[in-house]
Amino acid sequence: MDFIWLFEWLEASFIADAAKAYGGVYVVVQTAHLMGLAMLGGMVIVADLRLLGVLMTGFPISTVVRNAQRGFNVAIVVLVLSGIFLAGAVSMKLYYNEMFLAKMIGLGVGILFVYLIRAPLLAREADELSPWLCRLMGTASLVLWFTVAASGRWIGFS
Amino acid sequence: MLNEWLLALARWLDTHAWSTGLHESLYMYAWIESTHVLTLAVFLGMLIVIDLRMLGVLFMDVPASVIARRLDLPMMIGFVVMLVTGFVLYYAIPVRTTQSIWFRIKVVFLIAAGVNAFLFRARMQDSSASWDLAPRPPRNIRIGAALSLTFWTVVVICGRAIAYDWFDCRKLDGAFMYWAAGCVDELAALEGGA
Image (cartoon, rainbow over all chains, first blue to last red; front, top):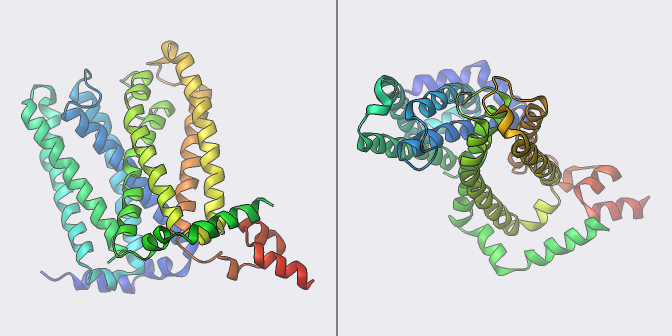
């Protein structure tokens, strides 16, 4: 599957013009992306460390995870919107960048994992789930989102 | 006077072989920089959870004092990692960073955020028993949380902007900007030529 049309569309769109026109605007959107990273990271860390039995122990998993999921939803929207804008300035470069591809695969897997596996499982019976399933989910989630963030950072160096 | 001292310090650090080595390394600088940025998720992540709780937005069914106390350790671990990697990043590029207007604004807001955190923490601990589960935290607590989020956002904006050369000494003009960015030689040349 070749997605070059998507990158070509982005390159020709007004988003690319806007992202290339003003350095100051670009920095502000980068900051929004970083604040989104921090917010998503915070929600993931609190929820996953609770699943691992490290943080917020003694409080029901369902309470911690439900609150964290609400924050996660906001963060992922901020990240995707700001990310599209940032990609607009360098879309053709990103098409050929392996780290960007790695990040997008990680992001896709992460979103499927969160909304199709994790959230439904935890929403139903979070406090009755086997502790090992919880630990497994917590670990998988931490590894996944770390990979997305780290490969994202490495786009800039590659 | 302060500008001269800071520049002298930076130039001395710049003579260190380790400073140049870090700056010119293939991967070490990138790894330290990535650690600095990714630790945002730990430090700012915990801070955002705490501040959103104090603003009355998230985790309202968990007592405020519990969130503040339990997330304190991971937040401080993140802060220490950011501080140490931040110093190393400064050490790798000391002169340009010293003369970066963004780095200077960043440090001012870091101090402001630190003072706010100090006051905020004391107020949080003073009154936590009385409003732990109140649907709307007290006004002073909400102001503290909003200021904290604002200051840290400015710190991130400035940190991100250090990477760009738009306001480097060679692109600046005028005595005030030279003074603000610490462009000691440029300011001397300007005043000498006048």
